[in-house]
Image (cartoon, rainbow, N blue to C red; front, side):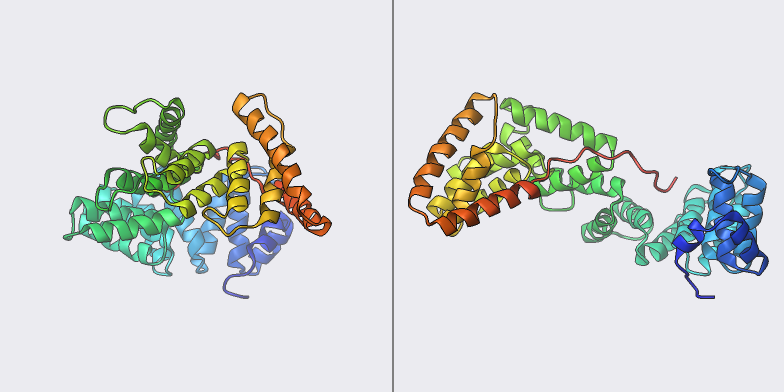
Length: 373
């Protein structure tokens, strides 16, 4: 039996097949029977006793996932009464086989004194073991303990290192904390675009504080007010642009284009217009056509210019400034086509159709996923 067989084979097998394999001593069959009886499905009724029996059997056969699952259930009181001694027993067994979830549970018990004497140093040691093996929740906890200076003398580099590693794996609390760090300059050079990027990723995972902050930032960017006394309207647009909001991305493009608020930089302006254009922002699409037509911030390319003019010209809008942009694109298209070959026009038309297929509207934040406890 391979050490880590394809899980989908077991997840799709019938209960009868799994039971046959389990009777032959297959630890993965016991594990997946445990999951079936824990969750229930169309073919299997929930049965906590059978779930626990199969998890125990799998763990005793050396399956560290089953051991970690038992530790979690006893630690949280899900499906069974809370029992920290049982939780620690199974977590230690799974941890000895390098299961990072189990290491995290042990660290949590030591950190908060659950069934053991509180010991922050041991908690840190177990968090660090799991963090070094790429466990995102543990990486976050290591960053927090370094930041609080509770165990060993930490520094800003260590906090940023572990926070970034956790955030890059998609752990929303780390993404939010990293975003706030860039927002305030706490332990890292202040960078509002990076702040928006990480707050946006946290919001995409339904982290409520990030959602609330970005909603406020978007409103202040859109309203063109002077901000809240400490943060300007333009700064809120930078934050929103970093989070992927198309109107804000367009605004940042205009800042770089005009030299207002940000140093004039045609290449940076083009990149921000491109980001907004690929999210369907009509005016940004028109600015790409202009940039390619003039060679401002990008190499001059009349085929690319015509392609974006075609994208804009074929759109509709009820907004006066967008209607004006559409009319300009339609007239500009005629001028450009008059001096281009039939072959080049056909290439531009093909590109325009491809651009339409690539344009992605901003995503709706996903429902929150449970992490840790």
